[in-house]
Image 1 (cartoon, rainbow over the protein chains, first blue to last red):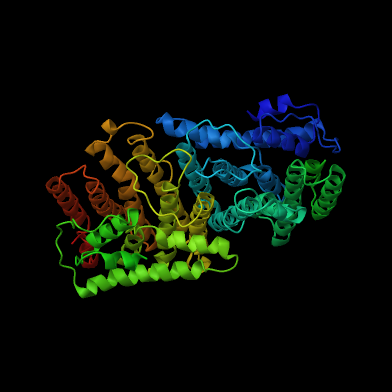
Image 2: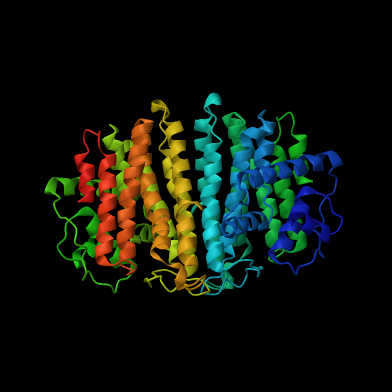
Length: 309
Length: 309
């Protein structure tokens, strides 16, 4: 389905802008890619392969770890909702950060998959039809299953991600401590001080719980920090932890992930017309400069830089 | 609020029957304790203190780990929903099993708290008002918060439980491997092959997704296995793992927990009138005998036996 979204859009080839279009397309199928972001397009074929192969690896890991098997009434909705969520770059950042500090892809693949599953679970619940109407700002999405199935499936996806991560423990390489640290990172990033705080703040400023007067640019930037920035930061930090990076490397990559997430978040919120296009590009450029600065000193930084092109 | 439930009920003093009444009272405030189970009542004051002190310790641990602090709009619903859930014996079984195999209470307190939080999160979501009516068999409960707040709060409680557990890692005593094993146990017990499977099966046999013809005693017993039996089994096994019990001890206590859970589940379903009282007591007695058998060989088994009186 992700591929289908790409095919519907036009010819931009940079990682972030493609993903933004993919997100938008999924959030509201009726929206067309008629206002592409004016972002620099310089990614080479090789670099695109790096991210594409990584995403394919994560998907393959998830498909293998969570097969569709009887009872299909349970596993089919789970499979659908896991892959129906819009792409998040947090899982890819996790693996890229692991490799950047000298780790192997297989050291971070379970954490990357767990990050995707957290994102998918919360996306499912974010769009659950409750007995009271959703806030006005939420786009309408197509629901393939009844609300109680989507609720239970989301509840099942969340612990499954952490189970996969815990099971990736390899006593022979003594990484239990690092996996526990990553579990703490991820549970905090998605919990009530993280993504859920962002969802709560977003609800509060919109239709059902507050008023449009709350939804100024500063407020929405804060929502973006919680919903996207800190989640991406967590993804990159987890990869660096699992790749056995130094504390300094972990913190630099955490900041890098945060800025990438803020760019992603800002562009999403920009599409809600709270930012003028010009202002939006200025903010994005500011984060891009900050992000590049955090990569200074890493030998193989070129691949991560391409995510900003 | 748990105390209040007890005060509303009459004079039975056994652990299980008291808890059943507490559960029932919470599930449907209008139901009165007018048909108490005819169970043996022999618990001594000292044995009651053991379970009461344990439950107070778990509550104190949760209160200390999850304080009410600004923003109150987030932490007050969380505090309320954590303690509004009906009691489950799985957390208490976790600590009792840990102590039975020679462990200390503080080795299992984080896991016991995590079990309570899983139970609270799923209970919150089980009673969430969705856009389509709940199955006919679900009792109506009072909702203190709007549906979106209850949804988000439940989503926040679940990862918080696993975060607390992961944070209980003590590198000095090298228990990372055991904590990861317990995380796997808990995530499986609550996930789509465990409690959530039970909720799904329960939904399927009732109003919204199926028909009453599905809801025979065998089906509901299977629901009880998934929703309660396996969760209690998990609680006892986790305690034995953290208390450094042998594999044999872990499996014996897992079975013991399962039978205790089945008794609890059977009595709950008995209240839904699918069992005749006499038949119900026969089934309960059968599980009681099996449970007692699993305790054979443990030196300090008397305290655990009291949970069956």
